View 1: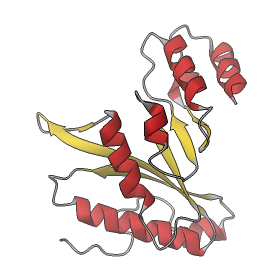
View 2 (view 1 turned 180 degrees about the vertical axis):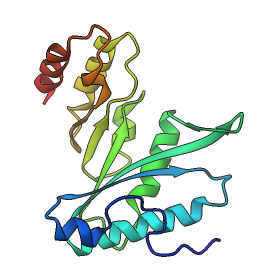
View 3 (view 1 turned 60 degrees about the vertical axis):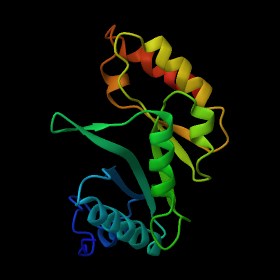
View 4 (view 1 turned 90 degrees about the vertical axis):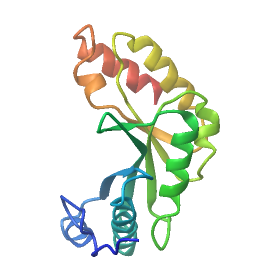
Length: 176
């Protein structure tokens, strides 16, 4: 196992700066590739960041993905079992999960996926393609799950296929 320096993979604010600046928390993208020798260091760095944020009573928003290499490129595995595995790993990071939240993609079998953790969860927007109605329906169904608390949707609302940003925002807001 590779030993990780404290927060060596952070590229933005550290917990102390988050607290000093009055921010609510920090977000981490956690790619877990079981075949990559750098994964243990990434897990350790994420665990340290979760612990550091918790020591300041700041939220650690973890966006975990199981990753596999396809033609030398990292690809997120969006199969339900892979998302469940990533959630299980992320939920156990740090000295406490008292301030940990998850940011997860909406995938098939979302009821089973959401049951993989008791942590509060935000739904990742994902790629809508040219079927935003299907995405909104999936969000609506997932928003009924007990630990799902909201949406983090970004480009789905900024760049809807029909260019009607106001309508896309209205639909997403109605789901909350």
